[in-house]
Image (cartoon, rainbow, N blue to C red; front, side, top):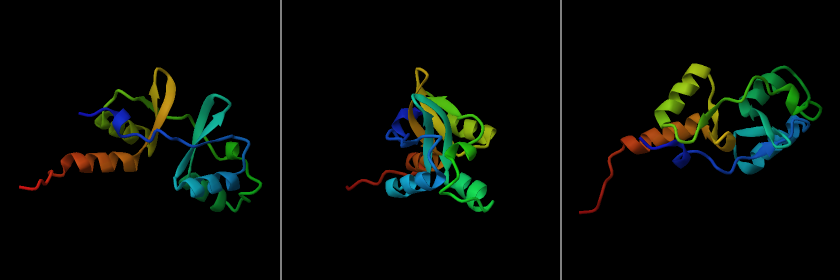
Length: 133
């Protein structure tokens, strides 16, 4: 089975934990993405998702322009080595209850894998290839 390095997003967008949620939402919108890795210098400290913004900011009536990303991001950043399989990633997401995994190589984050990435990859593997005779 193919490894994760072929299916992950390599160009991850990061944001500071000191940034506002409004700044984070703008970064997501302008990059057409649903999550941002939260980095404190060279260290990744979490992941901010659209769902986090909806549930923890909008749903609770907080002001996105005054709410720091650090107050919304919680828990640890789930990760998996780039040499692991799509099935391993699927199992890890299911057991951890997450939709995103940081993909690492040698302890460094090299990409991000979303549940959508997994679904697309599994679909591509299961569809028959139609050729021209």
